[in-house]
Every structure is written in structure tokens, then in C-alpha cells.
Length: 394
Image (cartoon, rainbow, N blue to C red; front, side):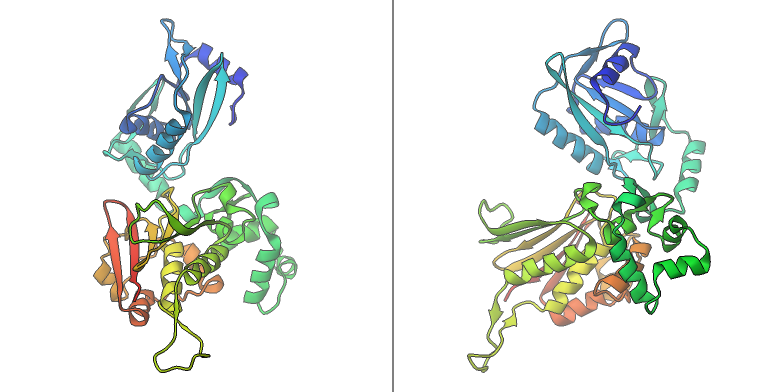
């Protein structure tokens, strides 16, 4: 069965009852309980969670409907992001059945098995119920997924034929190969175009992967809406302030996100006249542009793309904050990255960033930020799973 489903499909599922691919829920208020169902499907072959459905005496589904759809959808998204590890990307739809809303959650078979809940439970479907994953199964799942990074995984629906920005790719390839065209390269190497993209590390078979989507996709947010930068300039110094000076959400590829985010920060900072300079002299940006560039590009490249959260940029009256999803990987500390230590979380994405963004990949970015703007603090929030760069404004 495909997704989204029709009302006819739903009624058939209700008649046949719960099975390996279908779970009924009258309501979902407990995040851990919902995460257990999501993880069980992701560790299996995928399936559907139908919310607003009770089970009758014969095991068939009975429509009871749900309340507060907005709150429920937020709960689903937050649970998939915060209570499932690695994060899941469920799809959901609402169907009106007998004048009652029913929410259908579709969980694909996971590409990053094994999945677990925040409390550490590894589960999978077993008939109409779920069970703990055995040690042997766990070992097999870890072995199967050990050679993959999330950036390599194919993006469902991001077909090469429709979603690849060929002009952008061709311009990139020619710039990197002294003007040689893609067509000339394909003729010379006798490669199919699909094989060429797979060898570049930007596709898996007929679909773009995360790297391909973020650097050469036509509309990355169509498939990963949260992979954007949310920017807000506040009048005051508190995140909870109810008024702001300006706000924007920046999507597109990583190059556009970088350019537009930098522009947003710069337009909301002051340019100060250098001491002793003439009135007609150019003002100096109150925070070094070099430091801002380094902080932004690090957030875009090193963020945890398994977390369904955007990068956030806040311009307060006394500081600028750049908040990236994901704490430092592999037990890295702030002191270690200040000394140039680095463990690339997204190595393929990083390799493209050195050619398409102002990024050198030498592990010197943090040192450069501190040299250009010493009044900078780095906060590794392991519990909240985020990394924050805080730059004080003079």
C-alpha cells in the first residue's frame, strides 16, 4: 500500500484489523509510547499507525476520531525527532471518516537501523504487537548500517530526473575540471549518467542523497522542510521576547542558506566609524565578517542532519547566537575543537563544502573565530543536543 492512502484503503485496514504493518490508537498523549510504535515499525518493514481508531470485540477498527489536530501533529513531529534515536521522518495525513478526523502516520522501513527510543528500547513488529530486538538481530542491524552516514542515504522521492539542478551541477563540474563538460566526461569514461552521480557521492541509484539534495537539488525543503535557517532579530536580549525587529526563514541549498543568513546578520548589525577616521570613511561591522562566515558555515556543515530541527540565528541587542542541531560528536569537547581537533560528522558534505562554500576544512575555523572576534563563547549542549556560538556585540 502506498502513501498517502485513500478512505477506501483505510476502511479495508479497519476491517482486517491490526497486523505487522498496522497499529490502531484511540489517542497518543505519551511520547515514549508513541516512540515505541514508531521505532518498532522502522526496525521492521515499516507500517501505519492509525490514530482515532478503537478496536471492537472482533478485532476490527472502529472510528472514534481525534481532537486538536494541530497539537497532535506537533506531538508526532516532536516524538519522532526527540524520542526516536536516530530521528525518524514520519509522514502523516488526516482523513475524514464518518465525519470524524483520523490521523494516519506512515513510518518507512529505516535506513539507519537499529532504532531505539530515548529510554533505550530496541523494538520491532511481531504480528499485531511488538517485541524487543534480540542481541543477534541488533548485531546484524549495526553491521548492516555501520558503513553508512546519513548524508549518503537516498532521499525518498527526490528522483534524479525531476529534482536535480543540472545547470548547477554542470557548472560545478566544469569549474573543478578545467572546463571539461559532463557530456565529454561521460563519453570519455563510457559511464551512464546515474553511475556518474553515484560515483560523485550525490545520489543512490535513481535518487539524490542528502548531499546531492543540499548542493544540487532544485528544492531541498520539499523533502526536508526543517533543513533551513530560521533568523530573528530581537529588540531586546531575551529569546522569550514577544516583539522582534525582523524575521525570516531561509531555505534552498546550502550556498543560498549561507549567503542569505550572513546578509540577515549583517543588515541587523551596526557599522561603526573607526576612531579618528573621517566622516566619509566606511564603517566597520561591529562583529568581524570573517568570524560570522566561519560560524555560519560550521553550523551548516557540521550540524546533525538526523535531527529534525532547523539552524537558528538570533540577533539580540547584546549578542548574536548561531544554534546548530546536534552536540559535538564522538565525545569531542569545546577545548579540543579550540585546539583544532575535529571529527567530521558529514565527510562527503564537507568535501563539497570546501569547493562551494568559504570553508577550507583544516580544523582552524574555531581558532579563526576567536582571533577575529575574541568575545565569542562556544556552548556544547549535550543534553539538549545542540551546539551554540555566542558572539557578544560591543
